[in-house]
Length: 447
Image (cartoon, rainbow, N blue to C red):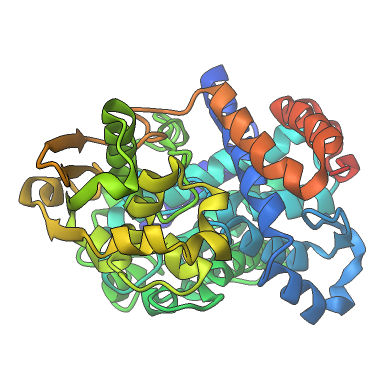
């Protein structure tokens, strides 16, 4: 038996397996949160540019593009909606895998479910299977994988393939081939988001489209290399450091990783969130204002500084990946959500001046806990000489400090209303909380 076989067996059985109510509810939370990110993201590049580039595949087919509601082929919808969900940096996270599972998994599942007129219940089952398969593969290959690879673009292909395989009704053999070919086509280099480019959201879109396409191909008999995970020239050997595949698959069908999903509370790279939480706590507790601050010291894990240590962000994308900017704007305005990244806000001289008074360093204790814990220590010194400190041991939205259902709904309203209006967003939210009661996902509408 190859390392991939247990994942294929699990996904094939997921179509009818018993699911606890709490697992289905966790999946609904993920769906609401995914739409919250994808709706505004779909009105921005690269999603808008992809829709124009793939014009021959738009306004035909059964799958839906967000936020317009225009129809498209399954593959085009998976690509475009997957990119949309990852554009504003508000999509979910599986912390231990350094991975955004919803972006590829739900984009692929939605396209497959609408293209095949599947029920909402089957759509939800596909999502759960996609999360369970891909998060375990992600944990197995990380943190070594994350040195060069973007997990959402690589591991996300397995999740998208698993979700689509469930919805298409593939048996274990065909599911294995779908996963195997998704694995050999997996890609996404971290260099793509070390500068201002549209590539990072394309990783999520490609993973969704690739996984779906390989499931459709497997349905017709296209085969893949069964040892793609554990072969001498396979995914694990090429893109990680001796992953333990047996441990990765051991809890499939027994425990549910989807219960440990992080829903973001800030519209920025997740590596910045603990420091944002800490400075917001200090701001609220001590009534701090930007002009009061002499110095801000941030101590966190090395990867956070490596990925988000940009002191000179020019664009909204770069600002979302700038820990100094995110902390400065949070302290100055009380928020690091969408309004924090407008052109006007980015040019604010008060925020820029505050950034110059920030110091970043690695905290050995915090660094040792990465990736299973994302923490930060923040110390603020005022111009009067007072010093205030706060340790954020986790991030608001992480499994050990989760957003409530109502907080997720509030996030959805904030993001969706700007994209589709108040009435449409209210109706859609109601639908999403009971998505598994829909008889035909193709009948779902945005407005």
